[in-house]
Length: 401
Image 1: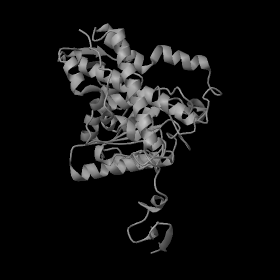
Image 2: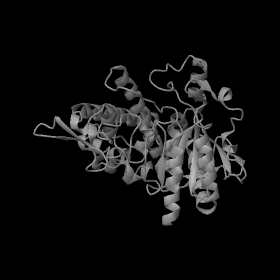
Image 3: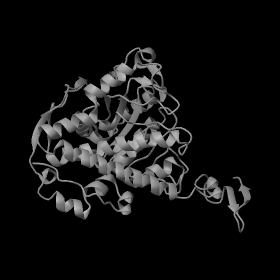
Image 4: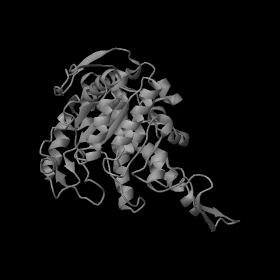
């Protein structure tokens, strides 16, 4: 059984759709996969690459139920994220993206696996490495590249840039530049969820570099006291900027950091392990309060675009992770070993993804820059602060409380 070919033509309107819609549900594609693996309802069980390591709880089973459609979706979504981040690297080097830019390639399994086990009513809040999380929440390639290039079509109207993506209607609350500051906000989201009794949870993501922040422990303490439905997710890519975890943390077992709060260490390069862990964590949080997930993952790029990423680690280390643990290649092997698609069909899918990304970039370049008067909008309460007025909106008026 194999995934049939994607059509070579794609509509520009697809760029306005989430990746699942743009690449999976166009009419021509629907016709071509009607009898393919993507419609196969079989369920089969796959064992995670590594066992879960638990603290103060019983770990979930290593056996994860999946189906052909889900595996093909995992491949497509992670391949899209990978191509998108590689394209962002090129745009930055061409000076079309300015300021800070932190890329997520290598860590795609965390974003995709998490989405597979929750709903858009659940909340996610993260740090500045946020492009792929936004895409997973239903954001579009056009919104992403427009925001990266500071254009009006961006998800934050071109005023947030790489670190400040946002999609409240899909439960995505940013994109935060202050190290660790998103964790107390995530616990606040969980407080609202418990107060409203809506049966949802919040995922507060942070890196190993932020794991030593005092505000994280303060937020965890109050969350445990009040049994808030919050999952603290440490994306441990083993380097906080250029500092190895063992140089910054006396105890790098971040899943144990909660002491009285249960924790789970997860292979963050295995999308099925992430899915299983997040499902387990959501069920736990709704019944018992907070839990910590440590995702053992890896970033291929440097910390940001100003970091070559090779002065504090060897190129052999990076290539070794690519060869042994790459999340996209792991899913590719699963798809091929279960005869869900051929090598050629997966390569054709990647070509279509590349085309989608290129078209999104071209359309984003056509979007205008924000008007200068927008500098003052969405900053102060209406009637206060600085306001632009006049026929050409070049005059300013300040009203202070």
